[in-house]
Image (tube, rainbow, N blue to C red):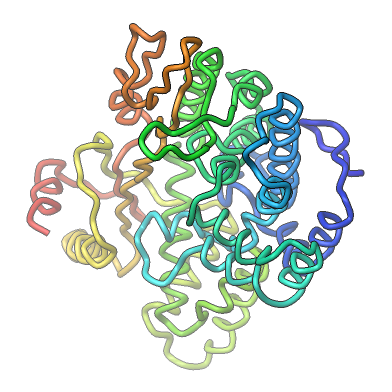
Length: 413
Protein backbone atom coordinates (compact mmCIF):
# COMPACT_ATOMS: atom_id res chain seq x y z
CA UNK A 1 0.00 0.00 0.00
CA UNK A 2 1.38 3.40 -1.02
CA UNK A 3 -0.15 6.66 0.19
CA UNK A 4 -0.60 9.27 -2.51
CA UNK A 5 -1.55 12.93 -1.83
CA UNK A 6 -4.09 12.90 -4.66
CA UNK A 7 -5.77 9.50 -4.39
CA UNK A 8 -5.03 8.32 -0.88
CA UNK A 9 -3.92 4.68 -0.49
CA UNK A 10 -2.83 2.99 -3.74
CA UNK A 11 -2.57 -0.79 -3.49
CA UNK A 12 -0.25 -2.84 -5.67
CA UNK A 13 -0.72 -6.47 -6.67
CA UNK A 14 2.28 -8.80 -6.70
CA UNK A 15 3.27 -8.08 -10.33
CA UNK A 16 3.00 -4.31 -9.86
CA UNK A 17 5.01 -4.50 -6.64
CA UNK A 18 7.76 -6.47 -8.38
CA UNK A 19 7.84 -3.92 -11.23
CA UNK A 20 8.09 -1.03 -8.77
CA UNK A 21 10.96 -2.74 -6.96
CA UNK A 22 13.13 -3.00 -10.09
CA UNK A 23 16.19 -0.80 -10.51
CA UNK A 24 14.72 0.76 -13.65
CA UNK A 25 11.56 1.85 -11.86
CA UNK A 26 13.31 3.05 -8.70
CA UNK A 27 15.44 5.29 -10.93
CA UNK A 28 12.27 7.33 -11.58
CA UNK A 29 12.45 8.62 -7.99
CA UNK A 30 15.29 10.85 -9.20
CA UNK A 31 13.78 12.08 -12.48
CA UNK A 32 11.81 15.30 -11.90
CA UNK A 33 8.41 15.36 -13.55
CA UNK A 34 8.67 19.02 -14.59
CA UNK A 35 12.44 19.35 -14.95
CA UNK A 36 13.33 23.05 -14.49
CA UNK A 37 9.81 24.29 -13.60
CA UNK A 38 10.91 24.47 -9.96
CA UNK A 39 12.84 27.62 -10.88
CA UNK A 40 9.43 29.35 -10.88
CA UNK A 41 7.27 26.95 -8.82
CA UNK A 42 9.46 25.83 -5.88
CA UNK A 43 7.22 22.87 -4.97
CA UNK A 44 7.34 21.40 -8.48
CA UNK A 45 9.89 18.84 -7.33
CA UNK A 46 7.68 15.77 -7.78
CA UNK A 47 9.06 12.92 -9.83
CA UNK A 48 8.19 10.42 -12.54
CA UNK A 49 7.98 7.82 -9.78
CA UNK A 50 4.81 9.09 -8.08
CA UNK A 51 3.33 10.11 -11.42
CA UNK A 52 3.74 6.56 -12.73
CA UNK A 53 2.08 5.16 -9.63
CA UNK A 54 -0.82 7.57 -10.16
CA UNK A 55 -1.19 6.57 -13.81
CA UNK A 56 -1.23 2.91 -12.78
CA UNK A 57 -3.92 3.61 -10.18
CA UNK A 58 -6.13 5.50 -12.66
CA UNK A 59 -5.69 2.89 -15.40
CA UNK A 60 -6.64 0.10 -13.02
CA UNK A 61 -9.65 2.11 -11.79
CA UNK A 62 -10.85 2.73 -15.36
CA UNK A 63 -10.52 -0.96 -16.28
CA UNK A 64 -12.39 -1.95 -13.11
CA UNK A 65 -15.22 0.51 -13.82
CA UNK A 66 -15.55 -0.77 -17.38
CA UNK A 67 -15.76 -4.31 -16.06
CA UNK A 68 -18.37 -3.42 -13.45
CA UNK A 69 -20.53 -1.92 -16.19
CA UNK A 70 -20.20 -5.06 -18.30
CA UNK A 71 -18.22 -3.32 -21.06
CA UNK A 72 -15.35 -5.81 -21.22
CA UNK A 73 -17.28 -8.71 -22.74
CA UNK A 74 -15.37 -8.28 -26.01
CA UNK A 75 -12.00 -7.81 -24.29
CA UNK A 76 -9.93 -10.78 -23.19
CA UNK A 77 -8.86 -11.05 -19.56
CA UNK A 78 -5.21 -10.91 -20.69
CA UNK A 79 -5.75 -7.69 -22.65
CA UNK A 80 -7.46 -6.05 -19.68
CA UNK A 81 -4.81 -7.24 -17.21
CA UNK A 82 -1.89 -5.74 -19.15
CA UNK A 83 -3.33 -2.21 -19.29
CA UNK A 84 -2.50 -1.17 -15.67
CA UNK A 85 1.00 -2.67 -15.94
CA UNK A 86 1.59 -0.77 -19.19
CA UNK A 87 0.45 2.43 -17.48
CA UNK A 88 2.83 1.74 -14.60
CA UNK A 89 5.95 1.41 -16.77
CA UNK A 90 5.05 3.92 -19.49
CA UNK A 91 7.70 6.43 -18.37
CA UNK A 92 10.63 4.08 -17.70
CA UNK A 93 12.65 5.59 -20.55
CA UNK A 94 12.43 9.16 -19.26
CA UNK A 95 15.61 11.13 -18.66
CA UNK A 96 16.76 14.69 -18.08
CA UNK A 97 15.30 16.97 -20.76
CA UNK A 98 13.53 14.13 -22.60
CA UNK A 99 10.46 16.05 -23.76
CA UNK A 100 12.53 19.14 -24.48
CA UNK A 101 14.96 17.33 -26.79
CA UNK A 102 12.09 15.53 -28.53
CA UNK A 103 10.28 18.83 -29.04
CA UNK A 104 13.50 20.33 -30.42
CA UNK A 105 13.78 17.43 -32.85
CA UNK A 106 17.19 16.29 -31.67
CA UNK A 107 17.94 13.00 -33.47
CA UNK A 108 18.17 9.66 -31.71
CA UNK A 109 16.23 10.74 -28.61
CA UNK A 110 12.91 9.03 -27.79
CA UNK A 111 12.02 8.27 -24.19
CA UNK A 112 9.15 6.00 -25.27
CA UNK A 113 11.34 3.82 -27.49
CA UNK A 114 14.03 3.78 -24.80
CA UNK A 115 11.43 2.58 -22.31
CA UNK A 116 10.00 -0.01 -24.69
CA UNK A 117 13.45 -1.52 -25.08
CA UNK A 118 13.43 -2.25 -21.33
CA UNK A 119 10.16 -4.15 -21.41
CA UNK A 120 11.45 -7.13 -23.35
CA UNK A 121 14.75 -7.63 -21.52
CA UNK A 122 16.15 -7.94 -18.01
CA UNK A 123 14.08 -7.63 -14.85
CA UNK A 124 11.06 -5.98 -16.48
CA UNK A 125 10.81 -8.54 -19.26
CA UNK A 126 11.09 -11.42 -16.80
CA UNK A 127 8.39 -10.05 -14.50
CA UNK A 128 6.00 -9.50 -17.39
CA UNK A 129 6.78 -12.98 -18.69
CA UNK A 130 5.97 -14.40 -15.24
CA UNK A 131 2.38 -13.18 -15.58
CA UNK A 132 1.82 -16.14 -17.90
CA UNK A 133 0.25 -13.88 -20.51
CA UNK A 134 1.55 -14.79 -24.00
CA UNK A 135 3.85 -12.09 -25.45
CA UNK A 136 3.19 -9.91 -22.39
CA UNK A 137 6.35 -7.81 -22.75
CA UNK A 138 5.80 -7.19 -26.47
CA UNK A 139 2.15 -6.28 -25.88
CA UNK A 140 3.11 -3.82 -23.14
CA UNK A 141 5.61 -2.18 -25.51
CA UNK A 142 2.90 -1.91 -28.18
CA UNK A 143 0.49 -0.28 -25.72
CA UNK A 144 3.07 2.28 -24.58
CA UNK A 145 4.12 3.06 -28.17
CA UNK A 146 0.48 3.15 -29.32
CA UNK A 147 1.17 0.45 -31.89
CA UNK A 148 -1.14 -2.32 -33.01
CA UNK A 149 -4.84 -2.60 -32.21
CA UNK A 150 -5.97 -2.89 -28.59
CA UNK A 151 -9.53 -2.10 -27.50
CA UNK A 152 -8.28 -0.46 -24.30
CA UNK A 153 -5.16 1.14 -25.77
CA UNK A 154 -6.62 4.62 -25.28
CA UNK A 155 -6.23 4.21 -21.51
CA UNK A 156 -2.44 4.10 -21.94
CA UNK A 157 -2.00 6.38 -24.96
CA UNK A 158 -4.78 8.61 -26.22
CA UNK A 159 -6.49 11.97 -26.04
CA UNK A 160 -7.96 11.15 -22.64
CA UNK A 161 -5.50 8.62 -21.25
CA UNK A 162 -4.57 7.92 -17.64
CA UNK A 163 -1.24 9.73 -18.15
CA UNK A 164 -2.95 13.06 -18.89
CA UNK A 165 -5.60 12.55 -16.25
CA UNK A 166 -2.85 12.18 -13.66
CA UNK A 167 -0.22 14.71 -14.71
CA UNK A 168 -2.67 17.58 -15.16
CA UNK A 169 -3.97 17.19 -11.61
CA UNK A 170 -0.59 16.27 -10.09
CA UNK A 171 1.33 19.10 -11.76
CA UNK A 172 -1.31 21.64 -10.75
CA UNK A 173 -1.21 20.34 -7.18
CA UNK A 174 2.57 20.68 -6.89
CA UNK A 175 2.57 24.10 -8.54
CA UNK A 176 -0.08 25.36 -6.12
CA UNK A 177 -2.69 25.78 -8.86
CA UNK A 178 -6.29 24.51 -9.19
CA UNK A 179 -6.78 21.47 -11.43
CA UNK A 180 -9.85 22.98 -13.09
CA UNK A 181 -11.74 19.85 -14.17
CA UNK A 182 -13.63 16.91 -12.68
CA UNK A 183 -11.16 14.04 -13.06
CA UNK A 184 -13.37 11.27 -11.56
CA UNK A 185 -16.33 12.27 -13.74
CA UNK A 186 -14.19 12.28 -16.86
CA UNK A 187 -12.50 8.94 -16.18
CA UNK A 188 -15.91 7.46 -15.34
CA UNK A 189 -17.19 8.66 -18.72
CA UNK A 190 -14.70 6.53 -20.67
CA UNK A 191 -16.46 3.66 -22.41
CA UNK A 192 -15.85 0.85 -24.88
CA UNK A 193 -17.64 1.46 -28.17
CA UNK A 194 -17.52 0.30 -31.76
CA UNK A 195 -15.56 2.45 -34.19
CA UNK A 196 -17.95 2.98 -37.15
CA UNK A 197 -15.00 3.29 -39.54
CA UNK A 198 -13.36 -0.03 -38.64
CA UNK A 199 -16.02 -2.01 -36.80
CA UNK A 200 -13.51 -2.64 -34.00
CA UNK A 201 -14.00 -2.10 -30.28
CA UNK A 202 -12.11 0.94 -29.00
CA UNK A 203 -12.00 3.27 -26.04
CA UNK A 204 -14.28 6.27 -26.40
CA UNK A 205 -16.22 8.79 -24.36
CA UNK A 206 -19.85 8.89 -23.35
CA UNK A 207 -21.42 12.21 -24.36
CA UNK A 208 -22.44 12.81 -20.74
CA UNK A 209 -18.74 13.46 -19.96
CA UNK A 210 -18.18 15.90 -22.86
CA UNK A 211 -18.26 18.89 -20.52
CA UNK A 212 -15.57 17.37 -18.30
CA UNK A 213 -13.48 16.48 -21.38
CA UNK A 214 -13.71 20.06 -22.61
CA UNK A 215 -12.78 21.46 -19.20
CA UNK A 216 -9.81 19.07 -19.06
CA UNK A 217 -8.51 20.48 -22.34
CA UNK A 218 -9.10 24.07 -21.24
CA UNK A 219 -7.27 23.29 -17.98
CA UNK A 220 -4.46 21.77 -20.02
CA UNK A 221 -4.15 24.96 -22.07
CA UNK A 222 -4.11 26.98 -18.85
CA UNK A 223 -1.32 24.84 -17.40
CA UNK A 224 0.74 25.24 -20.54
CA UNK A 225 0.25 28.97 -20.33
CA UNK A 226 1.08 29.29 -16.62
CA UNK A 227 3.62 26.49 -16.15
CA UNK A 228 4.97 24.52 -19.12
CA UNK A 229 5.24 27.52 -21.48
CA UNK A 230 5.85 30.15 -18.77
CA UNK A 231 8.63 32.35 -20.16
CA UNK A 232 10.97 31.91 -17.19
CA UNK A 233 10.43 28.15 -17.14
CA UNK A 234 11.08 28.05 -20.88
CA UNK A 235 14.26 30.09 -20.41
CA UNK A 236 15.61 27.56 -17.92
CA UNK A 237 14.49 24.73 -20.19
CA UNK A 238 16.13 26.13 -23.32
CA UNK A 239 19.34 26.63 -21.33
CA UNK A 240 19.09 22.99 -20.23
CA UNK A 241 18.55 21.95 -23.84
CA UNK A 242 21.67 23.84 -24.93
CA UNK A 243 23.64 22.27 -22.07
CA UNK A 244 22.67 18.71 -22.99
CA UNK A 245 23.29 19.22 -26.70
CA UNK A 246 26.70 20.79 -26.00
CA UNK A 247 27.57 17.91 -23.66
CA UNK A 248 26.61 15.32 -26.27
CA UNK A 249 28.42 17.07 -29.11
CA UNK A 250 31.42 17.98 -26.98
CA UNK A 251 32.05 14.39 -25.93
CA UNK A 252 31.22 14.98 -22.26
CA UNK A 253 28.16 12.74 -22.43
CA UNK A 254 26.85 10.01 -24.68
CA UNK A 255 23.27 9.00 -25.42
CA UNK A 256 23.42 5.79 -23.37
CA UNK A 257 24.57 7.73 -20.32
CA UNK A 258 21.84 10.32 -20.77
CA UNK A 259 19.21 7.58 -20.94
CA UNK A 260 20.61 5.74 -17.91
CA UNK A 261 21.43 8.52 -15.46
CA UNK A 262 19.17 10.52 -13.18
CA UNK A 263 18.86 14.31 -13.23
CA UNK A 264 21.47 15.06 -10.56
CA UNK A 265 23.82 12.35 -11.81
CA UNK A 266 23.98 14.10 -15.20
CA UNK A 267 24.83 17.46 -13.61
CA UNK A 268 27.33 15.97 -11.17
CA UNK A 269 29.20 13.88 -13.75
CA UNK A 270 29.28 16.76 -16.21
CA UNK A 271 30.84 19.05 -13.59
CA UNK A 272 33.46 16.39 -12.82
CA UNK A 273 34.26 15.87 -16.50
CA UNK A 274 34.54 19.62 -17.09
CA UNK A 275 36.92 19.82 -14.10
CA UNK A 276 39.04 16.97 -15.53
CA UNK A 277 39.64 19.08 -18.61
CA UNK A 278 40.50 22.21 -16.64
CA UNK A 279 44.19 21.94 -17.48
CA UNK A 280 43.62 22.01 -21.22
CA UNK A 281 42.14 24.72 -23.38
CA UNK A 282 38.42 23.88 -23.28
CA UNK A 283 36.51 23.46 -26.51
CA UNK A 284 33.48 25.70 -27.10
CA UNK A 285 30.99 22.96 -26.10
CA UNK A 286 32.88 22.16 -22.88
CA UNK A 287 33.08 25.83 -21.97
CA UNK A 288 29.37 26.25 -22.65
CA UNK A 289 28.49 23.24 -20.46
CA UNK A 290 30.49 24.75 -17.61
CA UNK A 291 28.81 28.15 -17.97
CA UNK A 292 25.26 26.80 -18.28
CA UNK A 293 25.55 24.31 -15.42
CA UNK A 294 26.82 27.08 -13.12
CA UNK A 295 24.06 29.44 -14.23
CA UNK A 296 21.27 26.88 -13.77
CA UNK A 297 22.60 25.87 -10.34
CA UNK A 298 22.59 29.52 -9.23
CA UNK A 299 19.36 30.40 -11.12
CA UNK A 300 21.19 33.09 -13.11
CA UNK A 301 18.95 32.72 -16.11
CA UNK A 302 19.29 34.44 -19.47
CA UNK A 303 17.33 37.57 -20.37
CA UNK A 304 14.35 37.41 -22.69
CA UNK A 305 15.36 39.81 -25.46
CA UNK A 306 12.64 39.11 -28.02
CA UNK A 307 9.13 37.70 -27.85
CA UNK A 308 6.74 36.86 -30.70
CA UNK A 309 3.34 35.14 -30.93
CA UNK A 310 3.51 31.35 -30.88
CA UNK A 311 2.25 31.06 -34.45
CA UNK A 312 4.67 33.64 -35.87
CA UNK A 313 7.44 31.11 -36.49
CA UNK A 314 7.10 27.71 -38.19
CA UNK A 315 8.62 24.52 -36.84
CA UNK A 316 12.35 24.42 -37.58
CA UNK A 317 14.87 21.61 -37.64
CA UNK A 318 17.61 21.69 -34.96
CA UNK A 319 20.26 22.68 -37.50
CA UNK A 320 18.11 25.62 -38.65
CA UNK A 321 17.69 26.84 -35.07
CA UNK A 322 21.43 26.47 -34.47
CA UNK A 323 22.24 28.48 -37.61
CA UNK A 324 19.91 31.30 -36.54
CA UNK A 325 21.42 31.32 -33.05
CA UNK A 326 24.93 31.47 -34.48
CA UNK A 327 24.07 34.38 -36.78
CA UNK A 328 22.29 36.36 -34.07
CA UNK A 329 25.12 35.68 -31.59
CA UNK A 330 27.72 36.96 -34.05
CA UNK A 331 25.68 40.10 -34.74
CA UNK A 332 25.27 40.73 -31.00
CA UNK A 333 28.96 39.92 -30.34
CA UNK A 334 28.08 37.06 -28.01
CA UNK A 335 29.88 33.76 -27.57
CA UNK A 336 28.31 30.57 -29.00
CA UNK A 337 25.50 29.42 -26.76
CA UNK A 338 24.99 32.79 -25.13
CA UNK A 339 21.94 33.47 -27.30
CA UNK A 340 19.24 30.84 -27.63
CA UNK A 341 16.07 30.61 -29.70
CA UNK A 342 13.02 28.92 -28.22
CA UNK A 343 10.13 27.76 -30.38
CA UNK A 344 7.68 25.92 -28.09
CA UNK A 345 5.75 23.22 -29.91
CA UNK A 346 2.96 20.97 -28.69
CA UNK A 347 0.73 20.32 -31.72
CA UNK A 348 -1.32 17.70 -29.84
CA UNK A 349 -1.89 19.94 -26.81
CA UNK A 350 -5.63 20.20 -27.41
CA UNK A 351 -6.17 16.99 -29.32
CA UNK A 352 -9.80 15.86 -29.57
CA UNK A 353 -8.88 12.55 -31.18
CA UNK A 354 -11.52 10.43 -29.46
CA UNK A 355 -14.88 8.96 -30.43
CA UNK A 356 -17.99 10.12 -28.57
CA UNK A 357 -21.18 8.09 -28.20
CA UNK A 358 -24.43 9.98 -27.79
CA UNK A 359 -27.58 8.76 -26.05
CA UNK A 360 -29.13 7.92 -29.42
CA UNK A 361 -26.28 5.45 -30.04
CA UNK A 362 -24.66 7.61 -32.73
CA UNK A 363 -20.85 7.68 -32.53
CA UNK A 364 -19.08 10.86 -33.70
CA UNK A 365 -15.41 11.82 -33.70
CA UNK A 366 -14.90 14.62 -31.16
CA UNK A 367 -13.02 16.76 -33.71
CA UNK A 368 -16.31 17.12 -35.65
CA UNK A 369 -18.30 18.41 -32.71
CA UNK A 370 -19.36 22.04 -32.35
CA UNK A 371 -21.31 24.29 -29.99
CA UNK A 372 -24.54 22.76 -31.26
CA UNK A 373 -23.36 19.50 -29.65
CA UNK A 374 -22.52 21.27 -26.41
CA UNK A 375 -18.79 21.26 -27.24
CA UNK A 376 -17.05 24.56 -28.01
CA UNK A 377 -13.39 23.53 -27.78
CA UNK A 378 -12.87 22.85 -31.48
CA UNK A 379 -14.09 26.35 -32.33
CA UNK A 380 -11.60 28.02 -29.98
CA UNK A 381 -8.75 25.51 -30.19
CA UNK A 382 -6.42 27.64 -32.32
CA UNK A 383 -6.87 30.71 -30.12
CA UNK A 384 -6.18 28.74 -26.94
CA UNK A 385 -3.04 27.27 -28.46
CA UNK A 386 -1.79 30.66 -29.72
CA UNK A 387 -2.33 32.21 -26.29
CA UNK A 388 -0.46 29.46 -24.44
CA UNK A 389 3.09 30.64 -25.08
CA UNK A 390 5.57 32.73 -27.04
CA UNK A 391 8.43 32.23 -29.44
CA UNK A 392 11.35 33.85 -27.65
CA UNK A 393 15.03 34.66 -27.85
CA UNK A 394 17.06 34.50 -24.64
CA UNK A 395 20.55 35.94 -24.17
CA UNK A 396 23.24 35.96 -21.49
CA UNK A 397 23.10 39.75 -21.44
CA UNK A 398 20.57 42.32 -22.65
CA UNK A 399 20.75 42.95 -26.39
CA UNK A 400 18.41 44.63 -28.83
CA UNK A 401 16.87 42.55 -31.60
CA UNK A 402 14.51 43.62 -34.35
CA UNK A 403 11.37 41.44 -34.50
CA UNK A 404 10.84 41.95 -38.23
CA UNK A 405 14.46 41.12 -39.03
CA UNK A 406 14.22 38.01 -36.87
CA UNK A 407 11.03 36.89 -38.61
CA UNK A 408 12.66 37.44 -42.01
CA UNK A 409 15.72 35.44 -40.94
CA UNK A 410 13.51 32.55 -39.84
CA UNK A 411 11.50 32.69 -43.08
CA UNK A 412 14.67 32.45 -45.17
CA UNK A 413 16.22 29.62 -43.14
